[in-house]
Image (cartoon, rainbow, N blue to C red; front, side, top):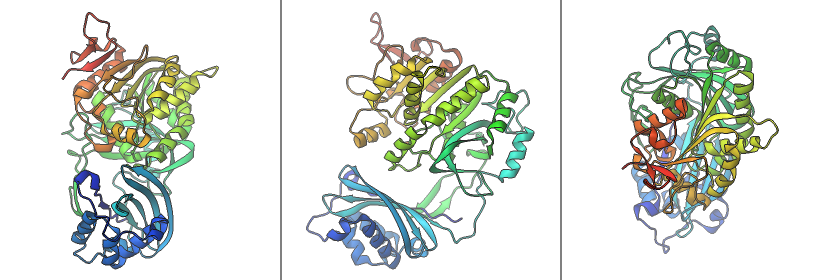
Length: 508
């Protein structure tokens, strides 16, 4: 399938522009009905009705639109989708001074995913982006996956998916160098495509099992996911770097397995420790594969690697959807832990939760701790947890009852947590405010602000950004050594001796 991605992202508050209230604005009847407003906007972009666009769009956005459409106001990929047949819209969600809406739009020849924001003061559209998918084009096979039947057979024969490489600790050598192989369990719906294995943003009813293999490039840098760069104009690719094994992460295989087949692989490995990674907000299934592979490779983790992928939308503005999905995934997460511990005899099940993944983990474990036969885990590492601070103070003591050790990595420079705080209006557990990070008995809090700002925007991966931080996580997982300042010289107690430390900081 040919994909065209159009992104018009122009937030007036960021760039310092403003529109005069004396200029014509969106008519009141359209302001009151965002579905009709979006329909009218699409029609105007399909036919080039520049007077309407000038009236509805903020000045900078209108000028950008004219420049990108040769002054005609017509965007061909959107025009080629044809008439609108159905719109599903959610919102508004207040972001700064904008009412932000999300919408799925079905056309005669395809569909499009929209996010747009209407400024309350200017009564104009100041932010807009959409991703149209033209379905009438000839389909192509995704480079990230292979036919499902071949993958199942390959995994059952145990050549590549089932032996060797970081994350598996098998006795046989890996069939390809720099290959990270791991299992996954997901609460996402399976994509309805018979030729490839992938999963959508939609929430499924059952836990689905599988295995994947990702190749790490030779020039990989700790904490990074190297992918092909692309250069776009008005959403159309002007140039895209070709995918190269020696430069980019490449998904070699993805296979969906029955629970029994999944368990057979674990038994073949005959390992006693596992690391379950729970990804965060704004993470697609494919990016979750990349991130898990990067972490396992950087850690050189010797045990079993398992990715738990919940139904994140993978869209930056779908925060509320993601938060609901995180809560929805709690039962599946506990089911996964019980499978590993009780059915497959993994003695040390460790959990690394990132961002909103901590919502899944903390709430699930706290509720499970109150049951008559709770599941116990080894180390719980909470990286930049996007959890309400007060909720964390309630949940964490319960979780501590069934966890061997708990480590919280917090940062005052994490931009995603800043956005989360602005959306929710409450401080987050992963923040480091002026009065210091969240502190609880028998939970080690480490301020990683000095490590630097997050590197990947809303994916905010400070915790995997430097070798020192990766080294500390590795020591925690493999030895459980404490206190933190005995692990690495970069970690210093606060306050300094002779006072008893209340938390720890990475040295600047």
